[in-house]
Amino acid sequence: MNIATKFTFCRIISAPVFFVLYFLPVWFKQFPLLSWISVFTMVPLLIFADLTDYYDGKYARKHNLVSDFGKVFDPFADVFLNVTVFFCLVLSGYMPGFILLLIIYREISMTFIRLVAIQEGVVIGARKGGKSKTVLYIVSCFAALAVECAVRLGILTAEGFIAAIGKIVCLVLFIGCLIISYISFADYLIVFRKVLVKRTNK
Image 1 (cartoon, rainbow, N blue to C red):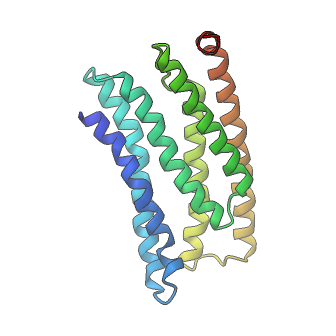
Image 2: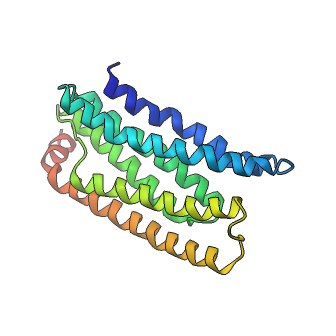
């Protein structure tokens, strides 16, 4: 496993760790200090995890380590981390469950398409639309986390006006995530339609 792949693998590991850190204050409400601990650990962890998405590609290109495996593993790690964070935000009421479900449908479908393409000897790497989608995923996650962290630190109240406005902004961002995810999915279908049609006709 080269360093670029190790960067990517960090996102896989970070996902369940983030989940635990996020819900520690919920599971152990008798320890209020856990709210502070969760804020000052899960946010840096997510920042680190998202930075690995930048550095794995940069390192791979710089040292000529770009591989077919990396082209598939990188988007898989992105989905693994983003869906985990989204799931936490759904359970906390920031993201509607149906949006997450539709996003999961999209990501599963994209994985299926990649597998079909691989059978034809074609490896589908990330395109600009997919990268833009990932950026909006990250922005949306941090926007919701900002509100949640403010509530956990006592800066905002969960039922307060500012928190309510924050949740509306997050909802708009999550709707944007859903829209751009399907636009990028359509882009993949258009670009690789010949490969997919060739495989389905066999």
